[in-house]
Image 1 (cartoon, rainbow, N blue to C red):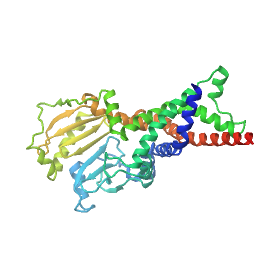
Image 2 (cartoon, one colour):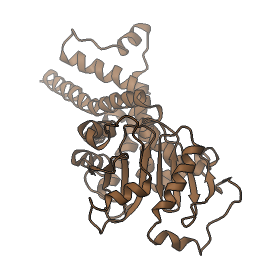
Image 3 (cartoon, rainbow, N blue to C red):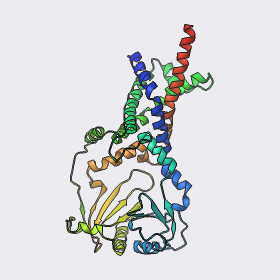
Image 4 (tube, one colour):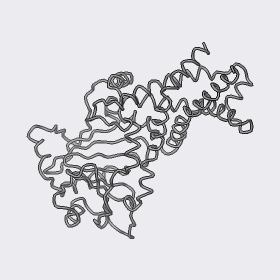
Length: 376
């Protein structure tokens, strides 16, 4: 049985190893994307706060922006953090993914927040091998190769576990440690065996969750496995529940009354004594209740765009499992579910996952060369 798994492990690793390394190493580079981006552009995320300074209302900030940005840009949302020294983030209808960093106490523009080209390239490599689909949800050759390679990676990891199982206590000790004094070949062998074992669980979680972005059939099956059936969203009434009617929907398409946002923001800050950030847009508010980089837990608020009256609040705890699963899978795929410590563990595991095929190639080439020399 051990010989069978050894052959499976080798035959799959040789053709797919390079692709697995590229996917794993590019994934490792993305683990701390937000932290690195903020560290490289601190002026876009942090501001100096004067003593006794009061944060401006959304409408005042938006009014102050009118002389600092082109008239063609229309504000679609504004996001405030609970941290006093954090900039507020303004989004626009026709600015693509670019957002604007603004001082919430003065209304001064800090600069545009745009995607970092390095991380954009790494993400494209990680998800599609630089061959992005023509449209969201569609397939491309690169996306297919990444998906198939991920399935193969799961088989390689499982077969590797069977090969790793020691036959004695002495062998167990050897397979849990790395020798640095017995030559390069022994070092790389021990690294491949021991580090592969320590990282297997994390790599399996990454692979099993990552497949939901590669194949629709897998995503459907995975969501169903975790109770992801279609359910009705529950609401927390704030007096009388008013469902959005067809007559109310067109209001979202007209220019928002930003002074209404002021009243909504003030009421929600009174309701929520603690939050990560509040993002207001026309008719809805997203309230992230998690501070830091842990798993996001957000309440959704619906308000009347003319009066600012809050119609209903959808609490995160009441949201059906089916609507939480994408966030769950993303958090467990990236390691953000446990904050900075799980992200560190995921970074190390992904780095090891990228090196394992390379050390495997080295050992395979060495063994093949030795067999040839012995044959001669």
